[in-house]
Image (tube, rainbow, N blue to C red):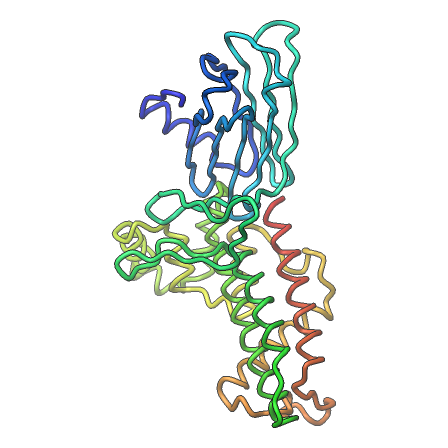
Amino acid sequence: MLNLSNDALKQLQEAICRPEGTIEFTYVAENLFKSNCLHEVILEVIAGNHYFKIEKNNMNLIFYHFSPGTDTRVAVIDLVKVKRAPIIYICFTWTPQEINAYVGPYKVGGEIIKAVGKISSIKYRITKNGDIVQLGDMGVEVSYYSFFVGGKPMLKPTAFDTWKNTIEAIKVLQKGSSDDGYIFETIISNLSIVTLVTGFEVYCKTRFIELEKEGIKPNIEALVTSCFSREEIEKQIPENLKNKASKENKSFLEIIADEKINFQNYKENKKAYRKAYNIKFSEIGIKSEELSFLQQIIRFRHRIIHVSPFISMLNQPEVSPEEPIFSSKELVRKAMECFDKFINNLHQTTLI
């Protein structure tokens, strides 16, 4: 493994904590081409919510990159194809769209072998205390995971993993059947709407926090002005929360997200993303009527929770002049399509 001083490692971590970049170095290849040296870790670095790993496994040089936004990706170089040399050039590039690996002899005219990355079956995750956890393996898939220490969560699914789990859970819920007929469909549909909106809230809040840890700098000043009243600012409430963040080993943005933003409230959610990251929900490729429908479903969730899970006419206060909207599997299907499109488009926007 590369020997780096603490200062050099810190500089490297700060330099590569970003959505895209390049790592390149030369490596004295003492064991690289030895078939009897089965495994060797050459580079392993955690930078914010990015994880980089380069390892030799048999006669392959394997490059891993993980971030919450892109999942774990892997690029593999077959060392048999690399011309042997005492010093090897190694280069690794990453963007939200792809990763690439380059390896070759460190000399003029040396042929460079390239490998393009793909989504890895081996998943890596970073716990709150900075440990690395491997999930799954070749042929082994993990659909849900969590890790608690002393009753406190150390590792939870990424924002996008949480959303995928939400969609899968609703699909399972929708397959349910009962002799109770219509009332059963109403209750199942209402519970699906509640789950869908909760998944929307969890994704938006988690992704909001993930972005900062992926190296995207939020506009904290604009966010504070948006989230705190003039009176709160005069009373030093933001400063108090900064101190609280420091004590809890959290960022100021994370504390604001926890205590000042209701991500289930569409207007608050929209304003938070616009102020912090200049992401506008109206510009992520969603039609205005789809955004209106999404907000309507959020309002239906409020009625289901605060009135009754048995209600069948979800827009009763607006009837008439509106036509009645009844809770049904078809309504859930349309809602899932709308929310899934919104989340996928928002996620892609956060990667640009």
